Image (cartoon, rainbow, N blue to C red):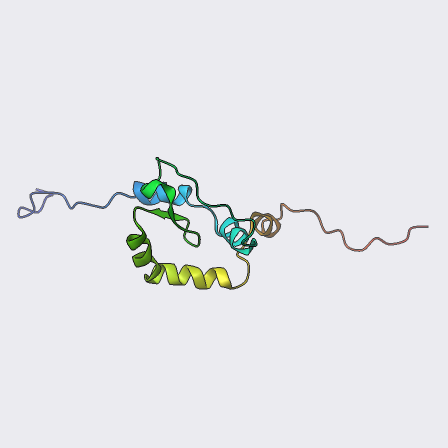
Length: 118
């Protein structure tokens, strides 16, 4: 009696597990920001890796993603998500773990200037 008679199948919901899995595999914003600030002479060529898409040769440094072909990577460069990410990385440095610790009161204590004691 508690069910709707016309509805035979439960509403299908999207799984949240894939989003959570991707969240932990991606580098943090502060790590990507520091990699972008490195001079180009220090950057190494990408090594072949069979576990990554496209043998690890087609990589977007801003988004920390690998692609299967250069055409797919070039299409990614035109997306809104990538352009927002590039704009964010050109701006001021994102928050780091040190900033989070200081905001949470877990950083070094600030006892003020030392006074002369007699």
